[in-house]
Length: 207
Image (cartoon, rainbow, N blue to C red; front, side):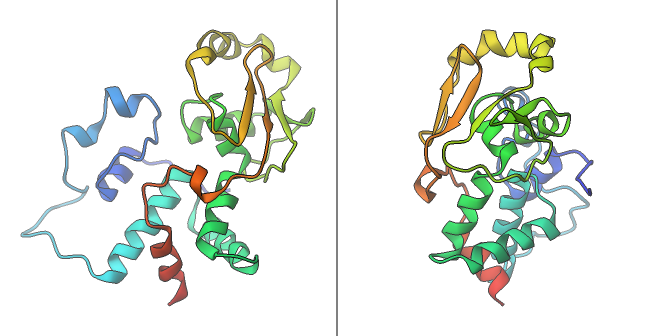
């Protein structure tokens, strides 16, 4: 599967704002704090963005934030369009339901990239079964936990000591003793801390 392997700080500089792609490191040590200009050679004045350019930038922000490549993001958008309701809201809900995002929201990982790695390495279970697909969509009532073999790892032991100070989304519940979470309900657009204009994404793909 294709994935972005270059420096993620370049993505934040291109977007012009912090996307928290490295978790807590984005707060303590962020390249954007020192280098505000986008990456690449800067010649003359920055060009004024067109409406299409703004839509593209918002679409890229969503992609960067959730760590999805273009083809997979386009498929997710098409699926959101086939569902009843507002396409933009459906898209946000589908992205939030991804297993790697849920692992991140539960506080098991500092970033979605780290959460995707935990899932890909087989450390995470859904309803007691190991699931290695980061794009797996959770459902109401699903239990997200750890594979028994992974509970002896150093990372798990450190997480057990730091999980107390973490908060979770209101559509999830977290058992801090067992380090397991439950999907209480499907997320709503109000539950998503969106820093982008989702309707601009819809407008981009609607042309």
